Image (cartoon, rainbow, N blue to C red):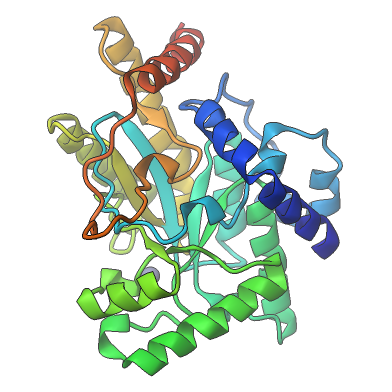
Length: 328
Ligand SMILES: [Zn+2]
């Protein structure tokens, strides 16, 4: 499997230009008709081998780079976007109990996400952590993106420069061992960052992605609470001139996994209303690319991103077609 993944990453590198172009073409909003619900239990799903996944026919996803080397060293993004585009992010995993359920619900919904993982969790020196390493590979295999969330969830603003470098070094070693390459995306633990930590992460080629939407799942205790918090976030954003959002969730809670189908269904139901009133529809982005902005001299924070008129039209046409089928 290591070889397969390495080959894939190698291919994705050698095809980086094509992949980038393809991304522009492929990153779509809602990915066609909704899949029928997967009848397997979480355990059955967790037991599925990567080999089985890999023997599926080649798809466009095969050239996706799960470590996002096309998004290296960008500006710090808070998720602002002129268009109604969403991307789900999951922090603090991998978790053997809850991450497989999150993956299953995302797959059923046909939505891809970014997982900001804590490297120590899958540093493969114990049997348990080797199982977590396999889970991290499966996150990549299923077409999601992986970013770093530190080695042990330390707050970077509370440790010195050398300790930060050590966190990055150890985490990169784990990623390289498990996935064949280092990560390029970073989500600061607790959201703690300052000019010093930004500079260090920049020197190491990381792009930081914060968030501007949440399901408040860290304090929630039920899927309903997560869904309501998300709905409130969505309503709020829709009434601003930069509605786009990076959604903060955690793949370490059962209630978060259970909230995913309802979060996706809520967005699709909202799209039915928007379709009716001929307004811009919400899109789920395949990755964080729409929120990524390259660094330029003096450009530290990402400005409000926007699709070009052509790109927006193409994505909206696709989303309208999908919505017409879904909303019938
Ligand atoms: Zn965290």
